[in-house]
Amino acid sequence: MHTKTMEGLIGAGTNINHVNTPLRVYKEAERRGDTGTMERAMGYVSEFSKKAGEYQEVADDGLREDAKEAKEKEKLEREKAIEKRRDERQEAEEKMEERKEANVDTVEISDEGKRLLAEVGIPDAAMGTETEKPDTGNISVSV
Image 1 (cartoon, rainbow, N blue to C red):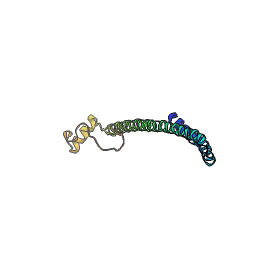
Image 2 (image 1 turned 120 degrees about the vertical axis):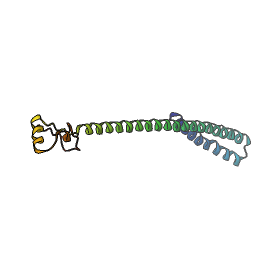
Image 3 (image 1 turned 180 degrees about the horizontal axis):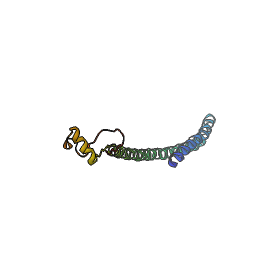
Image 4 (image 1 turned 45 degrees about the horizontal axis):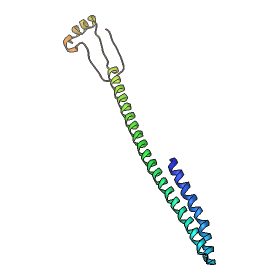
């Protein structure tokens, strides 16, 4: 809670409580018919009521400032959360790229293996030099 808000609420409450005493004096003076005391008491009531109103305005200003600060804080937190999600998504994409690159299997066929394949009837051109397969583990075979 903002200090202006606290000051305003406490001041307004105190001044409203102070109104009770002159009001009681006014009622007693009215029963006695003492108009001079009644006028003085009403002057005090008016003064305390006016001060209470001023403090209420201070409290209202403080509440507006509290609301403004809360909105700004919320906006900053929202922006931080958005930036954090962007960073997390980018890291996840980078990890997926690394996994894709790591999940490539290669097979190298030696010259002797190529000769044996040719004898069996599988031409060397049909084999190619490198073949990529889906994730089956990292295996390198030399024949």
